[in-house]
Length: 217
Image 1 (tube, helix red, strand yellow):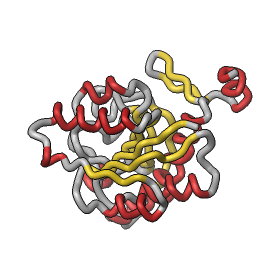
Image 2: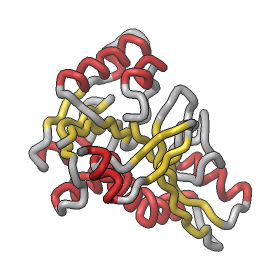
Image 3: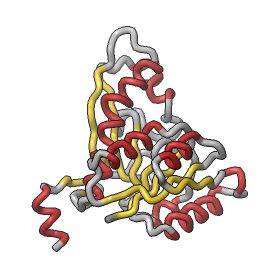
Image 4: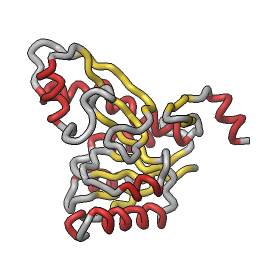
């Protein structure tokens, strides 16, 4: 059973979907070991506590720079023997050393179909504002492994969501979360814990169930 560490900054709706999926047996081969928040009082911590999961606050403001904060995160995750790190609405910048500490083991969900509408400045409602400003007809969500390039890591899963006439950024954000983010993230986490994700030359292959079983023997 692999240990999952979830990093959060706010309300934790993506975290809640992971907790629900775990309680319903949809995450195979893994369990959420700890939830770490970058802000004091983040409601995501209350969601973790209600589910009996260790909730930890490592407030970014308590460290002088990105490097020292990233080291504290790595130490906290390693202490708990975390195998997979999930960024679930984690809006705090980390160092390249943090990413290198967990190669192909940090998973992020982004509210667009990468590589479109990704990179610096594309987060939260800003993504959906940009989508509407460009007049695209289809958007969606992407789950990818994090690397040193913002939103540039290997893509694991994607799901398209239609942009409808009259959409506001808020309406579109809600639809993308409900139809794509909340569906994809538990799926991707389970695939990782089942040993069904293979990364080669920046490309992720999802292995059939029987192949992952053979590789683990």
